[in-house]
Image (cartoon, rainbow, N blue to C red; front, side):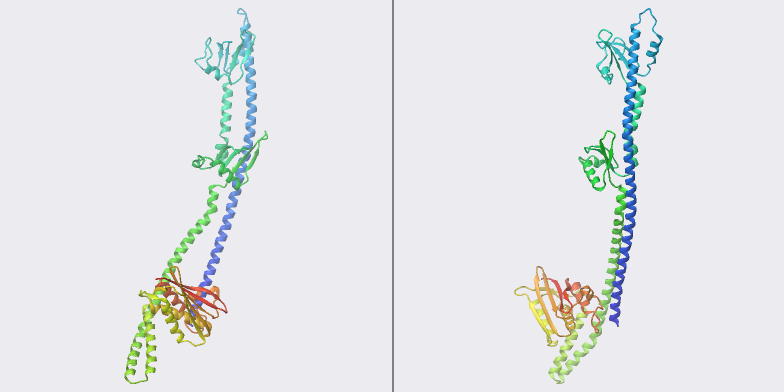
Length: 508
């Protein structure tokens, strides 16, 4: 009944683990699904922003072309005014000294309040000037090279009617320059201050040749690295198809973009969150598992010590009775067999008393020790079970063990094999060495163990037999791993053909 209850506990524990894992997987799946929806929405919104940005760039290109046309018209208009001004000057100079200058000519000359003009002769000596704020410009002086350079944005107007051909140099009017500077200032800041700031995603604006025209939302330190922008463009192109912009002159420009930092954080956040939760659960599970194992060990030690204590008194009494029977002339064979059983009880008591303490490990020749232990069990087993001891030839097979406890391990494994074979079959023990490890394999021809039960067979209470408590293999595992720093596990098993248990010990 107790064994059945223990088995039920382990079955319920496995079911709870399965349900908890399924529930956790459901939570993770739903979280990732919902997060993917949010990330998809943000990505769609960012792509929409980039498209708006692209449309803004197209409009900017149209504005640039209109601006260029406007400037050309303004420049032509001002040249016509300068030409009119030149004609008026010519007529004014052609009028005789005694005659009055035509008022219309005077009005034309005086109406020029914005366009800077300088009239020079063939030797670049200044004849007259207007609207020029330069102290070096005055009548009769030679036009300096620096001043000449400032006034050669446009071809001079030549008055060939004079000897040597007078020339009139001029600049854009103050009003024209102010309009031009204002429009160019707005247009030049359009991408950086309006467009790029409106799009929260990293973007690169490039022409057909791959030359970068503008960029935004990139790390300034990384941008300084040689070739960074080209590498970034390739990466962006692999993530999203670049947006093509066709200008009115037929040339093309491209907008490369990638997801924003916020989108990247949203995409990786669930994994970080699950990682932290998993770490917390692992630490909590490890703490609870350690505490549980500690409690189990205390229970094992308490039971073992109490068992050894309870067996001590009747064994002492039996030892006395054996001595009494020896002196009473009872049949020596009976006394000898009775003495063997008492010694066996003393060995069992010693085993239980060592549980929970630190047993002394001694370097032992495992070849002879295992053969002796194997032979002892064979002599007390039905002849229908065939024992085969197969040590590796010519090898030093030494390990540090506590003989009474390790004999208990072999006894448990052999009894487990006999029960699996129903007392009939073959039990083979192999012992050899692999590097710094001693390998002991114990095989039987029993009914085998399902692969799903390979680890479960070492749980307390697990057993396929109607009798017994299912503690043998659990004790075996504790003795091998806790006291001998080794390992014990099911190496292989096939139902209907048998199983092989392997013990691994540090070689000495």
